[in-house]
Amino acid sequence: MAEAQMKWVRISGNRRLVGYKVAMEWGRLLRNRTKYWNYRRAEINKEIGCAWRDDMLPLLQCAVIHFPEVIEEVAGMTQGAIEAGFDTSFPNVFAYALGETADLAERPHCSSMVVRTPDGMVLGHNEEWYEKRVKGVDWSLQLVPLLFSDVRLRQKSGHTFRFASVSYPFQLLGSAAGMNSALAFQGNSIGFAAHAQDLMATWNKRVPKTFFTRLMLEMKSIGEVESLYRRFHSTLPNHHYVCDARQAYSLDIKPVTQSPLPNKAPLRVKLIHTVDVHANDFLSKDRPFWRWETKEGRDDSSERYQELNELVRSNALKDERSVFLALEKLAQGHPEQTLATIVISARRGNFSCRAKPYFDSRLQGPLKRLSIE
Image 1 (cartoon, rainbow, N blue to C red):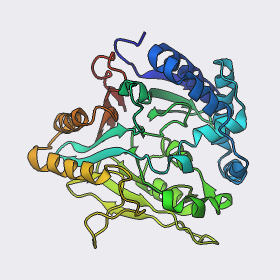
Image 2: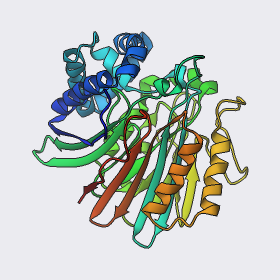
Image 3: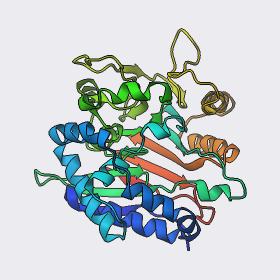
Image 4: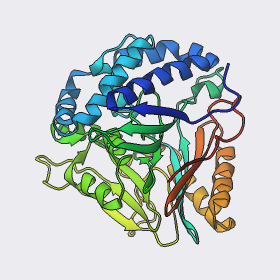
């Protein structure tokens, strides 16, 4: 039976232990959501047990060289997944943790906004998921659950670093959103089906997208995030809002498909002055709405972008509460695809998160506010 109210799960330890506990928690959460587990058990077991493809080897090799600390976390997740009863292995967990590959190229859904208030920046985000509906199946059984984690990571230096994460099943922490005491971010996936093969051709020089967001959880400034994205080429296109206590930035990560890749990865950074909204397409000045790929009917990104703009026009977005209510209203219009509303208030000395999950109708109300000082 589902919990009456979902809670932030406290996870602590070194990198391997954190990964281990994340996987064990996923085993518990999936099985506790009984109807969902019964409906998707075979699919989940197959995906986490057979996710690896040989063409992913260059990605793994690149990740091992540049980010062994994240690989250590994946190793812990592997151990936890096996002990939680999943028939899997390190390569399969690594592949599953990537989150998005060519077969998911046309599914991105997320709606976000950032608002400057007298007290600081407010980052609002509806985490959304789309799947083609199966006739005769309750749509709620097709909504993917999320893990809300309050993490105290014991770093190699011996220092304990605290951060909050919202992530997908068996993905790296931060794959949906995250914050620490100085920085907050979310992500808008961008459709890439038309360029999937071109991107894969240079995987030996690219870093998996979910590695970036995992690393961002331990960063304290926009400069660190910008440096990471300029040093390494991402496997996938993406968009972030990144906030500190004083400023908010919009980051467009648009991978180039040329070979060989340039020394510096392209990155567009824009300072947000008042309010900004984003869905799942890159925006540009020369055209009001621009798709990285041109396939029509991929999703309803443009419609949600217009809805977000209408929310801005019709609501006085002046604080956390008003942003939360606006996104909650948007979620009510898209119940079949909205997993959660997440709102982070970024104030000097205190970052706090208010979140409300929708992926299980039996969950009652928002999570208790989480603050990190």
